Length: 312
Image 1: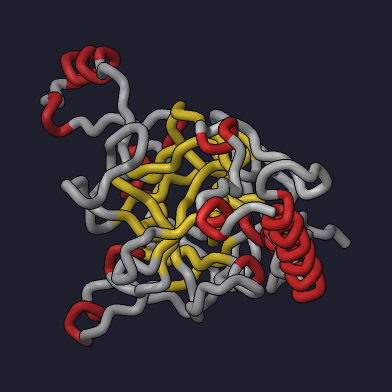
Image 2: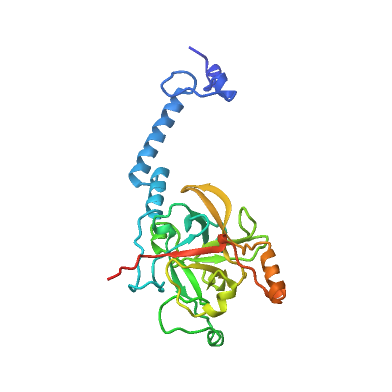
């Protein structure tokens, strides 16, 4: 029998384990087999407890996918060809065919921001994460409200300032405690910029402010004056101009992969052409190039996809 002094000097780990090699399992009676055997039992009990409580990573992921991708029916308040406030619609980019979507689990780690990521998804089927509703902008002061045009109906009009509200079904079931989530954009700064293009960042935020206000415009600048106040038809091309940054909502060419697959970056940037045609047109008509506004490119143009109108 070994002496007590020799027993205290015994190693419970093999030389291979001490040098960083693979440990023996609990079934192998070499080295620290007893410790590994107990650890295997602890891991098994922990796995069973998490499985019964539904807190496994796979369970959380499946719940997240089921919430974000749950089918949503596009609705209309009236059976006509116009877009109404409260209609559940999608914003489809005419160039890429992708629709604007949110990811409520990809949130800004800064608590004060209270925002999540926005991207353009190629999953065009209507679901919780890619459907929105329009909300009219109401100024906080009576003086500012007097400067905005008023409409007696609930139809969306060109030149009207609105907010884009995320479908509440995309937030339900998550640990994000917000009542209403809206699209929001910021001016480029050291703390706010798009991840890939370094342009104006676009997020979905639970903080309501003037940074959530967009103006609905027609893509052709020459027709914006005459189209102001005209009702917006479903499927018609529009441009969403952010009122604070004066930049249009844009779906860029920067692609990235997330849990939903490959998607495109959504930012705030007015993409225009070189403008040679506008210069030649200005020379022919005598209009200075400084007074000729360039048309935004197709990456800034969106179509409002809603429920098809039923013709009686």
